[in-house]
Image 1 (cartoon, one colour):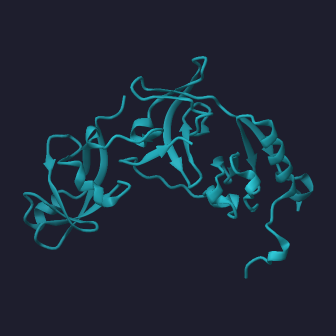
Image 2 (cartoon, each protein chain N blue to C red):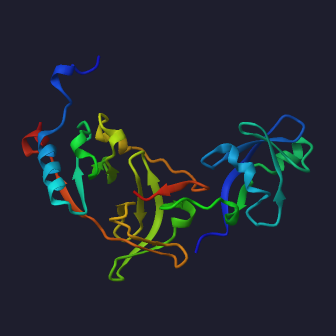
Image 3 (cartoon, rainbow over the protein chains, first blue to last red):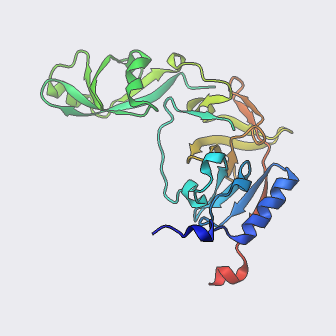
Length: 92
Length: 171
């Protein structure tokens, strides 16, 4: 059963405060968080979080497409490796 | 600095009795494997001309029976790096990035790029260090990528930990 709409998205409160502070500072910063359960809100867009996966803090660059998802979705807890082959990476 | 040949696939087990083989493609688009021209094995001496028949199934030129196909099982398929199309602006082949020397703007060593990963939230570089670092692949954190010189300049971002409040952690 999905979460009731009247409740709004769930975000840990202390995260919201930190994100606001990071946005206003404008520094090159990675915000290390443990809260994988928090929903990504529009005010997080453009920030970089380090989301804990039980071992490491995985860098997550928040973009508009990620709004509404949870932080944990972008920080896998299991190891997956693949060959580089012809795959490319775009610098954000 | 970039490798001259890149591993793009691997020949799997034989399929049927007419020399067909299963194929494992490592490329972003599995069908792109055949478009990189004649492929070679790990030694670079044997050329392997592939014809893709279906997804994951191919015919190797000169291989007509199952025994010959079975001898190819596990053979790596390598393509010439020069055959890959040029990337767009601010786009880099992972094969070009892996192994680059990471330095700070002042010239301090940060290790080498061990891997480049992307979990759907932007690419990041894994620097072997020590200590190991995960650096977001952004212009702010990696302002210079010089594949010809074999180096990148990294400006390590500040890290701010936001742990959960102690009462929540105890719960």
